[in-house]
Image 1 (cartoon, one colour):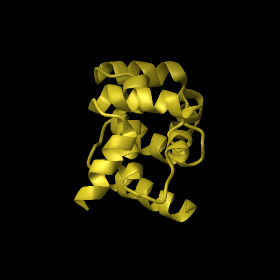
Image 2 (image 1 turned 45 degrees about the horizontal axis):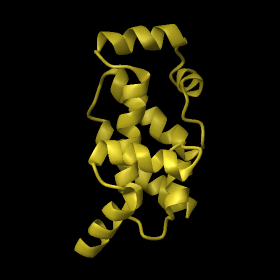
Image 3 (image 1 turned 60 degrees about the vertical axis):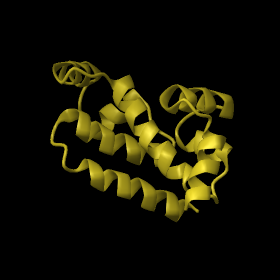
Amino acid sequence: MYGQLIEQAEKYLRSLYSQDDIAGELKRKLADLMARGEANADAACRALRLSRRTLQRRLKAEKTSFQKVLEEVRKELAVNYLSDARLKSIEIAMLLGYSNISTFTTAFKSWYDIPPAQYRQRFLSIS
C-alpha cells in the first residue's frame, strides 16, 4: 500500500514541476512530507533550507501563505486518494495530516460541498 501512495504522490509532484515559484516548490515538498507524516511548517522549512520567516516573506510576495499552500496540496491529494477504493477514509485523513476523520470530512466538505464518502461513491460509480 505504501508503494501506491508514493506513486500517487509522485504523480501529483510531476504535475507541480511546471511551477517554478516558491509556492510550487513548497507544494512538492509538502506532498513528499505528507507521505512521511511530517507536513508542517518546520519540516517544510528544513526541506526547503529556509528559515520560517524567509518562507513567510517569499510566500507573501506571491500573495499566498503556508496554510493556503498546505490546503491546496491536501485538496489535490484527497481527491487522488479517494479515487483508490483500497484506501479507507481514516487512512486518507491520516495521510493528509488530520488527527481524525471528522476534521478531514469537515475540510473536504468545505472544499467541494460534498462529504468524502459521497464523493467516493460518485467517483467509483463513474469509473
